[in-house]
Structures are given as C-alpha cells and as structure tokens.
Image (cartoon, rainbow, N blue to C red; front, side, top):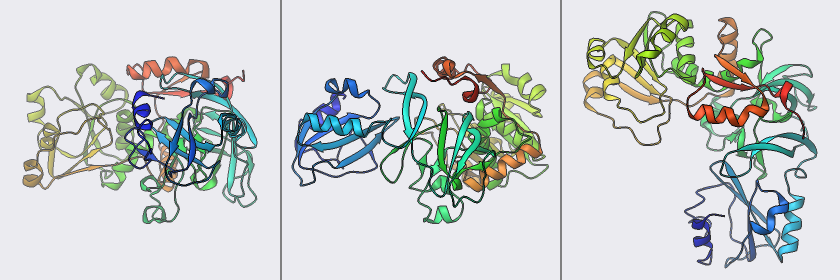
Length: 423
C-alpha cells in the first residue's frame, strides 16, 4: 500500500469515487464496518504485512467484494468482522481457488514488474467458451469446447488478441468494433463482469469466449503471433482511412515493432512506401530488407522540404514525443496523418497546415475481432509475418529489459508450449 493510499484512508469516510489514487474502478461502493485493502498479486502468506483496516460511513454488507484496477494491478476490497475472517476470505478467493480449472504461468506480483511462476485458476469452459493450450503468446491449439460452440473444434489452431470480452450490446459492438467498446475486457489484467480478473497468455492454458477467438491458418507459423497486436494495429488504419489503394504513396514514421509491420502491409496493398526515421542507420534495413521504396531522415530539413506534398497518407508509429508539423507538410492536399503510437505527453497540433491543405489527423487502436480475422487471412495470403525473436519463458524478464531498451528486431515471442515448466 503506497503513501498516497494511506493518506486517503486516514481521512474517513473513504470515498471510492473521489479516490485520486485508484482512478479506474470496475466495481465500487461504500460499506460499513471494516474494509480490507489487499493487493491481488501478493502471496496470502504475506498478508499480515500488507493489509490495512479502515472504517466507512455508508451502509453496506459484511463480506461484500469490490475491486478496481490501477495500471497493471488489481486491488480487492472486502469487508469482514475481523482479521481472521478477512484472511479466510482472501484464501478462498485466491488465484488458485477462484476458478475450478488449475493453471500455471508467470505473472508480475508487484510494481517492480518482475515476472515469476504462479499457480492460479481459469474459469470452467462455458457453453460458448473455448479452452486451448497456449503454444506461443497468444496462439494455441483447442483442447475443449463448450456445447454451444459452433466455430471451433478440438485440435483447431486459434489465436487471441488484445481483447477477450466486451458488452456485446453497444453500437461499436454491433458494428464489429469491439476494440472501441467502453466495456471492453483486456486479455491481460482486464476485469470480467463478475469482478474476476483476466490473467493474460503467459500460461499453459486459457479459456475464452469463442467470439473473441480467431482461426489461425495452417500455413501461418505460430511464432507470427504478434500479428494479433502489432499486425492489426497497422493493418486497420491502412484499411479504414483508405490508404490501401495500389499506387498511393504512404509514409511510415518509425521502424520498430509497429513500423516494420506497417511497411509490410502497405507494400502488400501495392502502395509506394517511404520510411521516415530520426536515424539514417535504419535506411538499409528499410529498403533492402523490408522493401520500402525510399527513406527520409526526419531531422534533415532539406530532405523533408524536398519531399513536401508527396504523401497520400502517413502511419505514425512513434510513441515518443515528437513534432508533427514536419509530417503534415509531407502530405498532399487531402492527406491523412494517422497516429497509432501513444506518446505519454500531448503533441502540439498546428492548425494552419490542416486548413490550407484540407488534411486530417486521426488515430486508430488495434481492431475488432472480424477485422483481426481478415488481417490474419490477408497475412497468410501474402506471406506476411512479423520479424521476431523467439525466447523461452525463463528468458521473459531479460526480454522485458531488452524491450525497454528497444533491443529487439522487432518483437519477442514467448515459446510457451515448449518452454513453460511448472515449478
């Protein structure tokens, strides 16, 4: 429990909606008596050192549960009469006992982000669920299906992307845009409607509703799993913004995990591609290996000026703060700049280039399930795969360290099926 949380809870009554430390609540409510604040990821044996009891003014029921998510961690709140009954409830609702299907994987247990082996549980395979053995993160082979599943059978190769659930009722969901549903459930550390959290794909098995599963083509290697994230993140904006027409000239800003996929898809659509990067060192990689037609160094004003007004559209994959005025000048009249990177701080948007050239700045985030399947089929047809480095489960923490340093070309893939060992 951090200092800010302590400061808040010392000022009673504790107000869930006004909490400044935990902004994203899945379930909230005030309860009477004693409230226990517990980090979901700690070992129950360490519980006495990591709990705090606080009193709330609003009426409620003893034994009620609430949970909310903060970044990569879920917090559980329970009300009990005393410490022992609270500890008993925690044990009963632990990772291992929460659901009937025993599972094993690796998980981050605290803010250090370091992953370690974890025994936990998955929900029982429901009537519309598919259970599968994870081979690569996250592509696997079906091992069990619910009695109302009609899309998949045991032995099928399947994949799961960034989402495992949504409300299924809103306008976005009815238009196959589950990725924009306000009630979307993330594959890793999301929260189901029953308040339980998702556990991601660093595990031996998963159970997912068939709607959020895509069929994995036999001719597509399983290590191409990053198509389900980086692939659709770049495929979707090219399609939606009409930047997939043969003969168009498309710019790709950044040549990392997203950028190299944008180049591959744009070329497969028949467009001319220019890679835009701050580093000249990536020129040979972009042109000789990935097939880009030209290369621009964004820090070279002469190059950027000479290329002004030459691009129909730009896919900007950069997550660092960077100027976009030079990029807008590269666009033709009616050109489109689409952001798929996510800088931590706001970017400055100059208006005059938009007005004078009728240009657009837009964004895009992953894709709906139908579009993910479309993308996977397109990738198989055009032999498009991400450039990956396959690593063992034991290497995962080192892989995370290297990923932070951009020391990978261009995506890590965990070989879970062959290297995950129970301990």
